[in-house]
Amino acid sequence: MEVIDAQIGHGPSVPYLREVLVFLLATVLVVPLLQRLRASPVLGYLFVGALIGPFGLRIISDVDGVAALAQLGVVFLLFIIGLELSLERLRAMGRLIFGLGGAQVGLSAIVIGFIAWGWGNSPEAAIILGMCLALSSTAIVTQLLVEKGEFSSRTGRTAFAVLLFQDLAVVPLLVLVNSFAGDGGSVLAALGLSLVKAAVAFALILGLGRLTLRPIFRLVARGRSPEMLMALTLLAILATAIGTEMAGLSMALGAFLAGLLLAETEFRHQVEIDIQPFKGLLLGLFFISVGMGIDALLVIDRIFWIAASVLGLIAIKAVLFVPVARLFGVPWPTAIRSALLLGTAGEFALVVVGAAMTGGVLSPDVGQFMMIVAALSMATTPFMMPLGQACAKWVQRRSTGARAPDALAPKQNDMTAHVVIAGFGRVGQTVAQLLTDQKVPYVALDLDAAATYRRRRAGLPVYFGDASRPDVLERLGMDHAAAIVLTLDNPQMTKHAVSAIRERWPDILIYVRARDNSHSGELEELGATGIVPETLESSLALAGQVLHGLGTPMEAVNTLIDRIRDEQYVGIQQPALPDPPLATTQSKSSGQEKS
Image 1 (cartoon, one colour):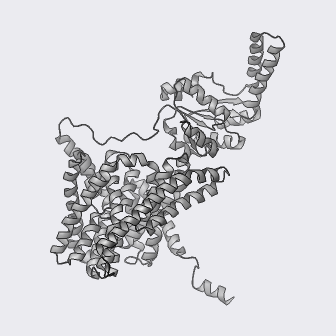
Image 2: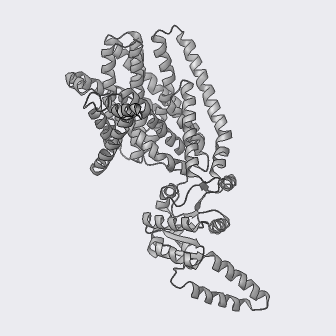
Image 3: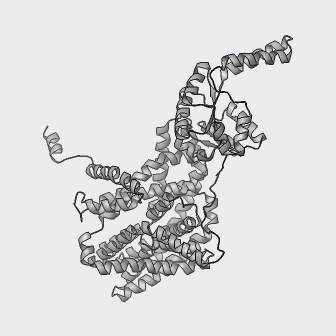
């Protein structure tokens, strides 16, 4: 009893429970408000962090503990980004990653380092400040690009390529911090060892992942347990993240590799949907932790020098980036937009400056000043996107006859007026074959992992996923689809799918395989366009063959079957197949009118 009383007296026994409650409350209050104002949630999270942190109302004081947990938000964000790419697309971006990214980091580090040295910092401190401030915020920049739908644009690809190299540059930067802190080792030897470890980690993750990840996911998916599939996804993300961290790389980079590996499998759409809530919540926590590091009193006390440092940092990095980007063939407007997005500091600057302060490389006064500069510059990142857009439009107007350089690149498997087939068993395959014969594009979903793998190896556009979930269907382009065909075996799942699809896409054509007439009536009430009861059709086909075999003329058999169909299909909307699906592929709008 005394133990219980003691626990009650000291508050919650679950670690970080109060912090989690405060964070969830802030999310529920801030995000809907900002959505109504059409503002970026990033700014709201940063403001909430500054308000509830140790320099504000002091509701949360353990910034280090919250920041450690918040790093998982960046981990999940990079995993989602990896799912959107592939190893082949990454190889195609190699010139931008290592060429443009390396030039940006090197040139910015040299210039910023010389400025820091000129202000009286030691050579070691100047090198650390130059390198860490040359890096940008992977979390904020990529989140902004995703929010605005520009991740696949030329600006998005350019910025993300540079951010990938910056993540790799963290390895030598941390080695330098440890060496300057006086660990007694050789800088070159430590750097060489770290690079070897990083190369080994890359090879192991990519090699073992390609060999084992898909078979393990297929094995777990056979059980059709969403919980087990979620557990396996989390295991894959965290295992690769920890693996790269042990090799001296960032956890986010390991999660990115896990995303790349799963992007080549049939599970990518289902996994992306399952992991989205984790990514959104933890990333919000990360932005709150950044806001907690902003000391409002110190900012007010040294407002001029802090503002000058923030603006100077952005200006220096942007001015250096634009000509380098032009040398790599990036158009002027894209170079300007990317330069402003990458002009601010990043989350690794906070980590590196903190480690440098602990090791005595930076004095506490300089370290705290630079952490505030880094945090405030990160807070300005959402404003850099509209500013970059305005500057790019001005440059484009000045260039006569210039084409729009930043149109969205086509996404992989981006189709319009196609048919989505939910359930790829015998019926679904028959529908797919007919569509293929008529040159109608389609994409299919199925919950049989082994069968999905075999069909993908045969080159068919089939993915693993739950067709009763609209968010999964959205990844297959339902917003631009002409029709969906449901051939699911489970009657309850079919009803749930029809209801969810009709609510989300009220104009889409929905063709369904029903169990029997009773099931057909239920599906009609839920909004199905065309329904075919499988028991009725199979029995009619069988009876027709029997009659014809006994000598009844085929015309008479067909007349009899048509009459029975008319009687049995009373009250059920029946399309004149196969015309409606083919007509909708020619024009989405005309198909919607017919529905």
